[in-house]
Length: 250
Image (cartoon, rainbow, N blue to C red; front, side, top):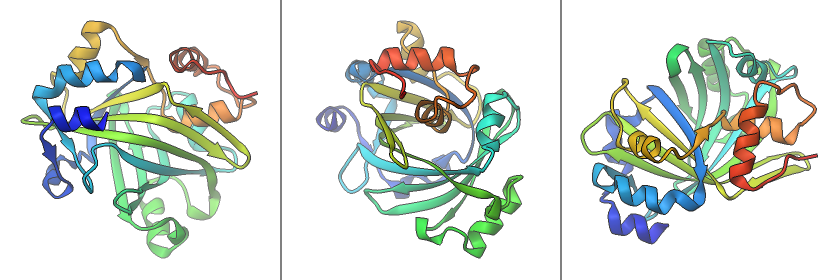
C-alpha cells in the first residue's frame, strides 16, 4: 500500500493543511473490502494528494472514547437523534500529536469538531473539563472510559476542492478483556465544506462498492457488547461483518 501511494500520489504535509482541516464539515461514510483499495486508489489518484507524516502515508491512530455510565452518547446515536455528541481523545501515534475532542453531529450529515491539544494523561485537567462543558451536554465527572479503537489511516486531500478523504484500515476495538479485529474492512469517509461532487464518491458509486457504515464508536460498542440494545444498527453491522468475513463477539 505504501509503495502504491508513493508511486501515484504527490505528498502533502501537515503544515500545508491549514484551512483544509475541515473541523466543520459534511460527512459521507462507506465501508468497503480492503482488498478493493488498490484499484480505488489508482482510479482517484489524479484528483488528490496523500498526507505524509514522518515519511509515511499510512499512519497509525488510536482513539479513546468516553461516555456516561448509562451510555448516553451511544444511545443518542442508536436512537437517531439529530443532535448528538462524542467525547474522545485521539492520538496520532506516528507524530505523537494528540487532541481531546468534542464532535457534535447535526442534521443532514453536518458535523463540527472542537479540540484541544493534550495527551491522554491530562484527563480531568481544567482545560479538558472546560472544553467538554462548553461544547457538549456532558460534564467530565459524569464520563468514563468506554472504548479504545485503533486503525491505520490514509488521508487524501483534493487538489482544488475543500475536501479530504480518510481511509481507515486494520481496525481493532478493545476494552478491558475484550478485543475484535477487522483487518479485511476499510472505512472510507469523504469530508467536505459543502455538498459538491467528489471523485472518490463517484468512483465508489459507479462500482456500487461499499455499504453505509456506522460510527467506529458505535460499531465497536455493539461488537464488544452484544447485550447492548442495537437493533437499529444490526442490518448495517451484518453487512459490515460480511465484508470483513468476521463473526460477532459472543
